[in-house]
Image (cartoon, rainbow, N blue to C red; front, side, top):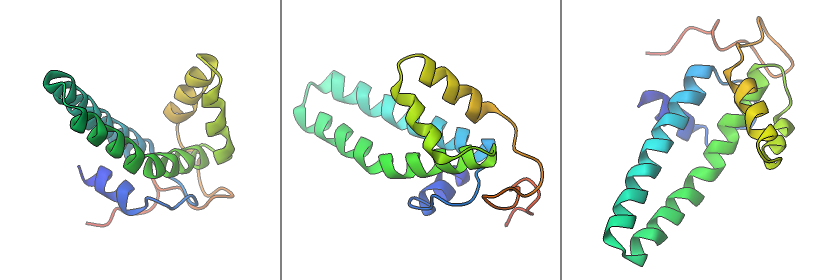
Length: 121
């Protein structure tokens, strides 16, 4: 949960780098929330809950883009690579490979390696 909160705190930070742990914990938490809200909305058949689901999606869009860009930066790629997700199937597979890739060792043009920065407690 702390990685989710950390990513939300950086909701509009498109510079720097994000570790795989930050990215995937954020994605997992968002996915769980989305599935739970979708199940509740589907079971209740209330249009108000579908509106809530849409609001959640819109609210999480900017932080998702930001953490995605930072994750790509960590692998040494430009954030513009997120746009490859528009391409059906190939784009999703490419992004999956990129986001699962290990961090580029040492500092790169986007900043220091977050693995080498001591975690704040």
